[in-house]
Image (cartoon, rainbow, N blue to C red):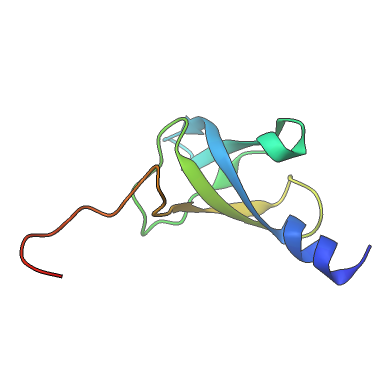
Length: 88
């Protein structure tokens, strides 16, 4: 496996498929990987716990979806930052 393929598999964007608030984990579905679903991933403590269908950024410890972390939601066209009053 070349370095670029490995790097693309270490950091992935997917959608929350299910969440477990008691364990602080989410399972994430990756449409670009034939809808593969990750194992339960711990969510970073400093982020708002994502809801089902939120787009999230994940990092993995290798090429598989069994060991990794959900870093949380990020701003995008679907989730733009809230405009805070005043100018630009």
